[in-house]
Image (cartoon, rainbow, N blue to C red; front, side):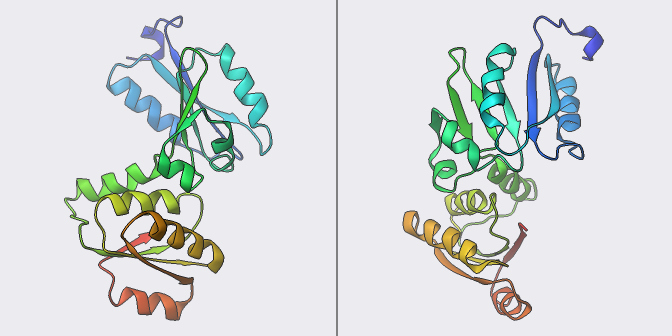
Length: 205
């Protein structure tokens, strides 16, 4: 199905918001997927700067949109506007997909972790009992950590340029799961030490 074959009165519009948004290829990929499965929907990028979320969310009620996708710098800020949010996204303050129901209620999810787990599943990698080294502790790292914990990893070490951020993710995960955690500064020495016992390396910077 292509745009010329769609009934525009039935097309679901799914904005992709962020700033800067000009270099994002996500809408192109989503539209390829919609076309492949015959879904009458279209994603398009919208430049929404930091601090402009209230105006965008107000405009959503005028769109025939079942929701929207968000990227930087909005993933953390969106959590404050959600009517419902899953536990991992709330704990680690990261939402990148929002469903809007017919009454305007917004349900937020951080789906970045589903993507990284999908990569392991596609390659038939069993995560149970594994030791993981993750480089980076930005907005997506907590969601990654939560998904890894649900798959039964034994230990997670997080190294980050700002050590406090790595410690926050590690301590938060340890407080709500049985995963053994460690954190530290992202230095060559720390990376070599952690890599000696790690089974898996995740680049999340």
